[in-house]
Image 1 (tube, helix red, strand yellow):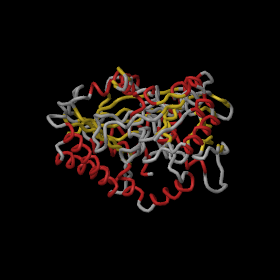
Image 2 (cartoon, helix red, strand yellow; image 1 turned 30 degrees about the vertical axis):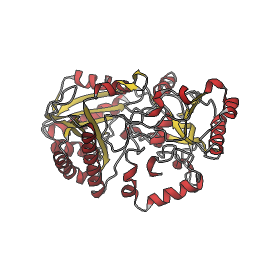
Image 3 (cartoon, one colour; image 1 turned 90 degrees about the vertical axis):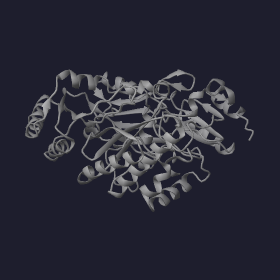
Image 4 (cartoon, rainbow, N blue to C red; image 1 turned 120 degrees about the horizontal axis):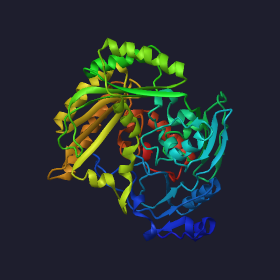
Length: 469
């Protein structure tokens, strides 16, 4: 297929369009890298072009051009997506939104902020803190991820139980549809005026429309934040203790509870031991103090052992460090690619009824043994229903076999979670990695989603192949 980009260059300018061999290698994949367990290729093809728009009107022009040129559009933000949601396909055009990074308005009285989709989350939070406000959304990828990407995956961060997901903070959206129409939803705190249009674009990874700006609910900087670490005797006792805290009405600003397993093949080493709980509260001093009085009562009941304060300080200080492993060390090569070249490293994040978590733990560990894949950690994050499991397998003599074994183990663990009444993801979205499981996840609902896609994007211009669409 031969495509001329003259009209697009004329609209955006030569500095805003890269074509063919001029496209940087980074756009062949996002943070879904070769060390993950998967049946699909390690990276996608190079896109036909990359464009850097500066306004919603620019994005609309790109959408109209792509339709005429029979190109698909892949929205790109920080490139931190872990499921391949920003991976290009054949005859695709990547639209990198990072030049759209203005903060349009901060309303300190109403506790709202309107910003463009390409702004990096940490930059937005820094701007807000100058006004004694904070973003609220605090994922591991905050120093690199963009607002549009966080909305596209409806990600959750460390303060997820206190602040909700990224989508929960969205009051209104500016979105470009496949035909170039610009839709702006009303940024009201509450509305019962029919279909909540903004929800079509939250968590759908740019398959229904391209988010170009959002009005968000933001939060005062808390008067006090206090986090501590504890050692629990075993996972079941810790789960019961944490569940009782939440049932008592406590609202942690941070909760990470995980048991570790020995993993000698892991490049950084991992030893087995009793599970560790990191627990934090934020808000007014009296609320934080009262929360800790209640929490410690439940922790004493299970004989939890307090760890030195430096453990919690180090955990909190380094919570974003993993994102830097996805920085490039050479064109198209990241630190993670180099660091994990001899292992297949992957994870599942499933949402389950609390009553099913221990049964799921037993089943998941059995699945890993059958596939000769080692667990690294099993835990819950932000709230008792959200389960995380990290796994590893050495590459050995056959990298493809190792990738397939991990992929099959993950699929089986996900299907087990679905059979127990859970969901296969709560934090990273679907992308291409989990698209093949969307039929089992949504059932007849997948056909409903496809009908909506047909109505909004009949030519499959917007990010095709992602989220089962």
